[in-house]
Amino acid sequence: MQHPLPSKKDSFLAWLVVLSAALFFCYEFIQMNMFDAINGELMRAFNLNATQISNLSSSFFWADMLFVFPAGLLLDRYSTRLVLLIMMGSCVVGTFLFSASQSYEFALATHFFVGIGDAFGFLCALILASRWFHTDRQALVTGLIVTFAMLGGVLAHTPVAYLVTQLGWRHAMVVNGFLGIALWILMWLLVQDKPKHAVLTHDEMIKNHPFLPGLWRALGNFQNWIAGLYTGLTNLPLMVIGGLWGNTFLREVHHFNSANATTISSMLFMGTIFGSPFFGTLSDKIQNRRTPMFIGAAISLVLSIVMIYAHYDNLWLAATLFFALGFSTSCQILGYPIITANNPSHLTGTALGLSASIIMASAALCQQFFGAWLDKLSHGQMVDGLAFYSDTMFQTTMLVFPVTLALSVLLVVWIKEPKHQKIITHP
Image (cartoon, rainbow, N blue to C red; front, side, top):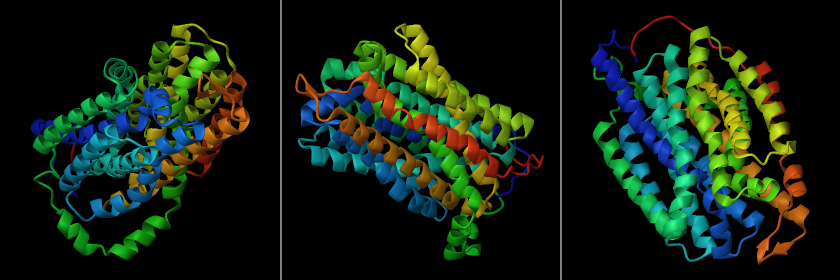
């Protein structure tokens, strides 16, 4: 899609559209990561062990993985605005249903349903970004979209924990649902499919590019697979520690109270809020993706080892460590402009969908592995009616992060640096 040189008004509109769409991703990040704040309440409500709570949380990622590739195909062929509003509405409905769950099985099904919507959230924002912004700004825009998501990650911790303390987890989820309604209205008012001055319409794009050849082309592009795997592996500390086990790890191993543990865990997301635009801006400025990707993953590897073995009982020290890990792992956002640049524009959704399915599968598998391995090490130990996991058990299980981060460092070798063209055609 080509555009004439934009006015300041057009540039402002581009930011307004894309960041409004990013609110969907922000809302989904609340649903994805709130289990770190409420897993204790859910374990008591449904009498769950580590494997079961991990399965409940990871059902979101499995839904995302199964539907994100079809989501990409749909978004390449239908109105992004329409798809976004329909799927955001389904997430809100799923959130209300989750709040009413009376059994583990129903909670599992409703959380899976919410995860289907997440398959569309990030892709909608990225596709709109690819239409409203030039490729030379893709990393920065992607970083800011992820920043919005991380705000959801922060909201999923201390604010959700506070609501749970004051209202109970069910009523907290009802408040969560009403927040979704407010965001849906805002997106309905602001999101537009494409700039009005676009030369090539979305319908023309579909007509000129048959479905099956495009699908096979996306599947056959090695960069889609390797960039997706890099992003998925680098993202695991955020998805597993920030999304589910951080609170419990900090309470059991480092003996923080629940409020402080939740605050520290949320620092992973706060670090990503600052790190995502930093890596995006740096990469765009030096016109290089691979070097920041390598450095960020290497630093994350070192910090993950420190997180596992260092002894820290000081709130600020622990918060700083988690913030630094979130900051360094935000190098993962550079995988998305790699994919966008290495695929034709009419396959943006398909290619991103394929890579996102890899990312979500990585998170789902790691969450389930983490819970199952904890249960294996604990041999069914119980304290006060709840499953007990010692500091040694956690440290052993968390070795998965140095291993996966080491793999992400190695994957940078196979990533192809995209060619940047200094052609300013739109914001």
